Length: 339
Image 1 (tube, rainbow, N blue to C red):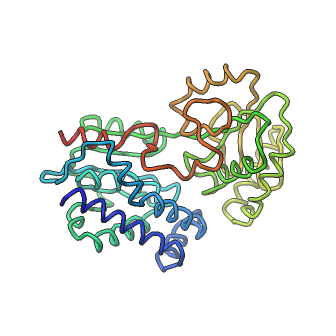
Image 2: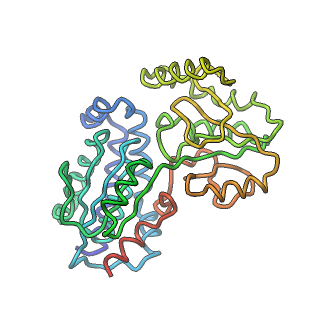
Image 3: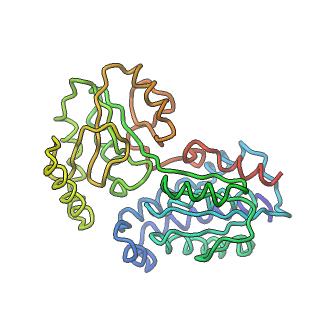
């Protein structure tokens, strides 16, 4: 199959996803029924993002940075172990393996077993040559040349041991942070609310921690967060909110509470659902050093301050094709194993 065929197939898939996003076919209902965190709104948000990412301009801009073989006469088989924390979280790996002309064996998370097989079936309808290059399995992975695995810090230790003899990308826990200066506009803070609450805060690109100046005034921040007040109507979310609030109050931790989110002063990066940690800084230069020292724990830094590789407010959940998880270039990895 020619590279042009692969590109055209994914462009067509992007157009299909745009149509699916505007409807509610049975597959979306099935995905929501299987995983209560996969609400219709969140699934459609993911589909919309991918439909936009798979535009002709975006795909061509992405692939032109690499020397991808036009044909795939001897594809490598890449085992991809996918997370299931947000809808279609493994799609970029799926896309990267196939666009480079390789074969994928995907081991899906039990939390996200419906959406990607459905999308793969549509891709095969567009380009039947993909059928022999896509496999989903619930069994032990066998007969592969390389591995891409995403999981927790605990599962990563298992992955590193089990797959050490294969070329691999092993992704661990990461969280995103926001550095506020107190000079943010209301539009920026409302966009930050999207970075915090989209997908209920379950993604590695969700902001789970705030860095604030010493004299920060929370009034505008909480006013901006109010646009997401309806999140408390989700049963799974409110159960987490009530539980975390009760635990913290029993332990006499001081909290800031707006009745649907909790702010807790804490030096950790990974906060529970419904909770955002915060830490105050006295020097932005010292904070830059701290962020650099903890770069292995941080996926995105959201800010309007002068910080390297920062992400704009509201953009964490809409990465471009060339925005790689953990800063590891997946396509470059895949091309090297094919050499």
